[in-house]
Amino acid sequence: MAVSDPPPPAGLLADGVYESLRPGTALLRLATTHDREGILDGAWWPRSRDPATELPSLIAALSERLGPVTRVGLDGDAWDDLPTRITVDGRLVHIDSSVVGDDTALVTRGDRDHFSLLVIPPDTPPPAARAAMADAVRAGNPRQARQILVDTARDRTRPTGPGGQR
Image (cartoon, rainbow, N blue to C red; front, top):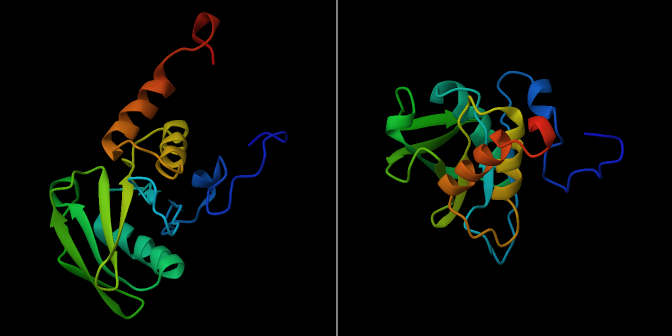
C-alpha cells in the first residue's frame, strides 16, 4: 500500500498482507451487516485445495468474528478429499459437499444463520485476489461469486495504459 493510500476499512486486509501471513492463517474479508445488502458476506483466499490444511484456520477465524460455526458447505469436486466433519477448537463442524460451485462457500452459524463467501482460487495472482476480495464485500454488490472472479481476472490482465502499462 502506498503512503498516500488510505488505510483499508475495518475488516479488510491491506495490500501485501497475503505474503506476510504465517502458514495456517486464514486470509478472509468479512463485511457482515444487519441489512445484508449484497449477495456475498465476505471472501476467502485459501492457499491450497487441501481441506485439512485450510478449513481449521477458516473456521477459527469465522468463529472468532461470527460466533460458533456449525457447518461449512463447499464444492466437493473442487477440494482434495473433503471430509464430512472436522473438529476445530473442540467444536464439531459439519462439512457439506454442495453444488454451489467451487467459487462459493456457505457457512452456517448456529442453526439457521447463513453466510456466503467468495472462494478465490489458491493460484490467483495477488492483485486479482485483492480486487475480488474488495468487490465481494462492497455494500450492495449485485454480482455472483463467479462473475466477480471473471471480472477481476479480466481487469487485472487487460492493459490499461500506453504500451500495456497500468
